[in-house]
Amino acid sequence: MSSPDPRSTPGAEPGGGVAPGDTPPDSGQTSGLSHHQQKPPRALPVVTIVISVVLAILVAALLVSSAVGWLQF
Image (cartoon, rainbow, N blue to C red):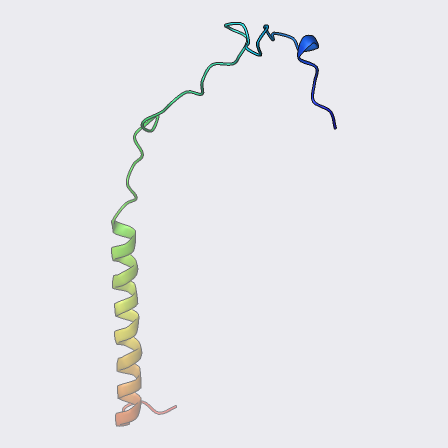
């Protein structure tokens, strides 16, 4: 593969430089987000934990009452 001939490269100036305006500008720099992102609601994890604890207590009560003999399967 051969390199392009600098004499036929568009925009090339003698010495290998390019004319001003022939190159694209630098990429834009963004330091932050375009809009404020909302924090996820805190209620969902709390509800999930409460439901899990209630279910665990119900299962434990079922097992204890079955072991004591209050329930018979």
